[in-house]
Image (cartoon, rainbow, N blue to C red):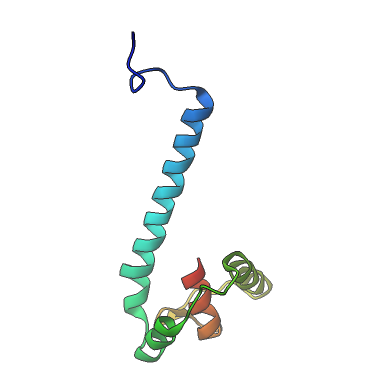
Length: 100
């Protein structure tokens, strides 16, 4: 008799596990990028805005979609000053990054 741990998994279960792993790795990358790469580039004022921002009452998906929609309407922004794209509202961008 085979152990339940060694029994072959169904394809749908394997696909679900692969999906979960992909989501997990994506979240790890986003968190690392946010904490290690982006936050240290912010000015003191923008760090304070980020720290005081409470996302618990926000619809995260809506915030991200609205910001991306605004960016599509503008020309592609390349240059960043203190972690904020030139031409972007610093509060909107910080909210976007925190909700991402």
